[in-house]
Length: 85
View 1 (cartoon, rainbow, N blue to C red):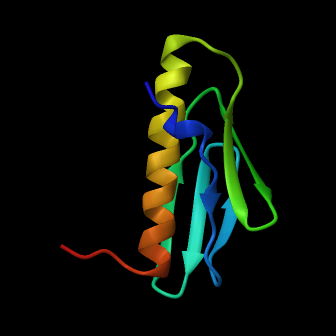
View 2: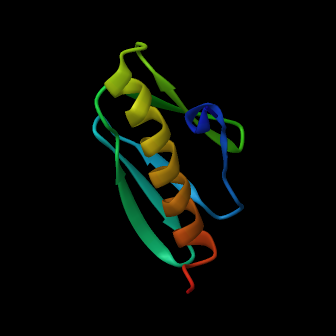
């Protein structure tokens, strides 16, 4: 099984991320979007990447890790390129 949560999220130019206790706020040229920060997941920014880490290896936290990474990545795309069909 792949570990989607371990992949860093590259932040395009013009995208800013505000890490709060229970959510991530993405701001870019297309507006702003909010993604929840689920229990057991921590976020940090290193240079131009957003990294999500889990606090423990419980099954629920492991599933939240991949989900949270995908939600954050989608928000990043939404505020930079926009969504399309």
